[in-house]
Amino acid sequence: MSETTDVKTVSDQGSGNIVFQNVSKTFRTPQKDVEALKDVDLTIESGDIFGIIGFSGAGKSTLLRMINALEKPSQGKVLVDGEDINALSAAALRKKRKNIGMIFQQFQLLESKTVYANVALPLKLNRVPEEQIRRRVEEVLEFVELTDKKNDYPSKLSGGQKQRVGIARALVSNPSILLSDESTSALDPKTTNAILQLLKRVNRELHITIVLITHEMHVIQSICNRVAVMEDGRIVEQGSALDVFSAPVQQITKNFVRTVINDSVPGLLVEGIRRETRNYRILRLKFLDTETTESVLAAVNKKFDVETNILFANISEIQEKILGIIIIQIIGSDEEIRKGLAYFEASRVGWQEIDLEDNVQKKEVIA
Ligand SMILES: Nc1ncnc2c1ncn2[C@@H]1O[C@H](COP(=O)(O)OP(=O)(O)OP(=O)(O)O)[C@@H](O)[C@H]1O
Ligand SMILES: [Mg+2]
Image 1: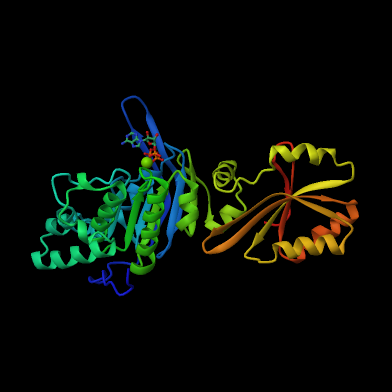
Image 2: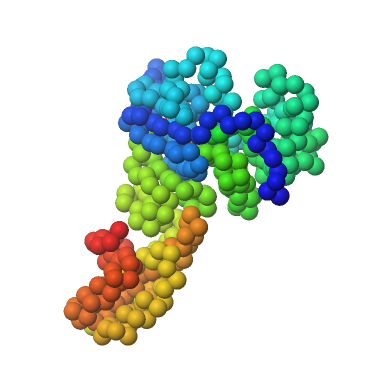
């Protein structure tokens, strides 16, 4: 797709900044009250691809639906581009909503309408002149690479194509925010990847802030720059994707990270490690954007009277940076190992000692 595709024909309606201030939500049902959100404080900056991850029932959709005021807080405020979305007049809210596109797991297309008519619908409802609609729909269909399908009905499309229609429809009003509720959860891995790359283009080329919710950490890994982890209505951890992946704090976050970086010692190696009669420790090393992984390990072996065995290694790319996680057994006297650790620190390689039995960290020295 050429970079000259001009899908940004209407002026910007906002910068796409979203702030949650101490937001709680209680659903009152005849049976019981459900506290779906509890004291949520969150800032999503203009230009972010902000991922929110959590298990089913954590409150993700409720949180997302607050951004376009489909749900109202029981307490607290939601500000979109500085405006309290729940204090707007009906007319102002309608205008604001045009600035916020949304895509869904089940696509939510009208089966009786063509691709073109599905995408045109938001503009039709807003009584945009026919000729302007035609130009705009063609632009966005080109952007999502579906020009050749414009006269087809949704039933003829694959899941990935349906989601492209969903994205085109969300973009047609030229929003500055796109909300994505599990938009890849119904797709196979290859199609998921293609849709995620399209969302990245939406963010980069059209300068649209994206808030996406998911229960899959690889979705966060592939496109998000920031992430919040939700558990039982609360945000329990948040930060840059790189920080969260390289040094998760909460147990739930560690479990999510483990689904993409399974940094544990293979069982087959455990017996050999235990047979070692010399003094040793098991370390988890973290290399950030250093191409020096091997040279740091080689230097430690050479400079000090220690031996190192690699038990696990993983290199992943997060936010266009390289994150290396390596687990080693380092063998030597306490004194020599201490020197090795100091050398890791001087080389800006984070280390923590881990317990071989359960892989639970004992102490974290460098974050
Ligand atoms: N309209 C409603 N009335 C009553 N309870 C609700 C309503 N909407 C959501 N809830 C409850 O609020 C909690 C959070 O729901 P929510 O849909 O936000 O979770 P979620 O993280 O999106 O889950 P999933 O991954 O399954 O989509 C759940 O306990 C849910 O049952
Ligand atoms: Mg949901």
